[in-house]
Length: 300
Image 1 (tube, rainbow, N blue to C red):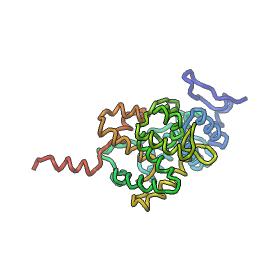
Image 2 (image 1 turned 120 degrees about the vertical axis):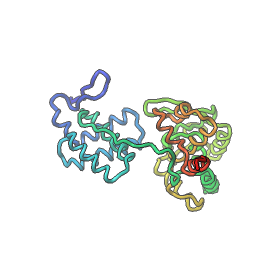
Image 3 (image 1 turned 180 degrees about the vertical axis):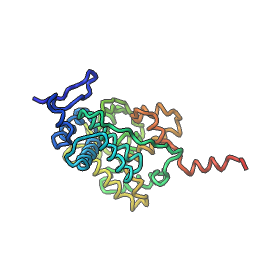
Image 4 (image 1 turned 90 degrees about the vertical axis):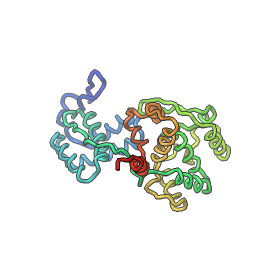
């Protein structure tokens, strides 16, 4: 049986044994399927796996059956640069580099593009508190009102949409939940007000145990369904659709939390960020706030 050879640190050093060196140079359906299994074993989020699969498939299309070579990967990076912004390119490269390492093609991994961090956030994408309140008001009036409680939970905890399954009846009862994702564990607290709202929802839905946000079949809510329901609120709430997506409620939580507790490392722990630089992006001041500060500086 063909097996992956491992280095002492546990990382893959080559696929399909000693005699499979040439075969691992090809991006085949079998290789992509093995990579998917590898990501699942690492407990990567379903959305992440889907994204990585899409990027590796695009690379396979570019290679058209040819071997993986560093020169080819660099050429592919240049094509991506022509079509996407640097941050987006780096996200795509992260998926490709992960695949190249897994398949034993470490020598073909490429560097990420250098990105200059902006001193302020993109106002066009920033969900303002007044817009959030209009969404909440609109969601509360919908037929089953589930999205109202989902929005309250995302903005009140800062969790990722993929972590909603950890908001259980037991967590509501104890006031805290342990998030287990991507090989990391972290605890989040549910405020007294949020717990009261969620108990209200549980009573309406007769939920006594397990995840409280599920489909009719009892499975955790799908990201695409949540996004679709969010978008439906926008017209009635008079909020730009481009601002309404699950991750923006995480950003809203981060900004509001940081306004009260200016402790960036602490916020990074709450959000589950490995790098504090990621957290810094979440709390960047808007251009409007930046302009107000500039206007107060009297040099003329």
